[in-house]
Image (cartoon, rainbow, N blue to C red; front, top):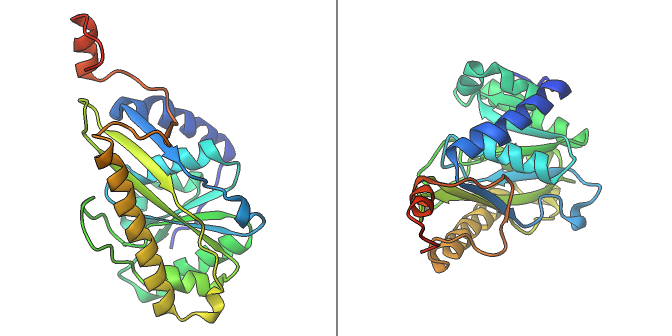
Length: 245
């Protein structure tokens, strides 16, 4: 497996590049709601589990984590992808190779070690990118093993919902749910996986309903994490002297 090789100066530079150029260039809006660092989990390792529906998930999660917390964050990525973008290792990204049992075990043990040493870890337990509306969410068993290895960890379910709503550029929202605090050591892996799968699946549906019920406008709980630019239709409206439709 490929371990993370955090580099503080590169991280600081990439954070600016990601927020000021990459995300702003491709998204009209990116905002977040909920607590990424809940008070009830203070002093305990944090394991974030997130749905995985686009190539952008890691970069958006990285931006939210760096903007909203002062913790050391680590991100699991498929080894094939990380091999293409090795510089991500300097941001706290490490690999998992699901085609080799030994590599899977090494990555999960590494995850537990990072958690025990005070790092916060992001996992995408679906194991691969799935369409945003894919149901039901099915989680791989690895996240349950991590919690058995680090039972003091608190799980924060995180969902990302994005799309082309009322503008020419997509908009994305990230929702941090209520922390899951359980006696993981006393639960078997099947029970843990079922609990997490239900929690994340329900949150994706709640997140979707928030957007649908608000007519495609950004719901009030979400606060922007980037400076909002204008989409093509907004430039046209401004040019034609039109206000908000």
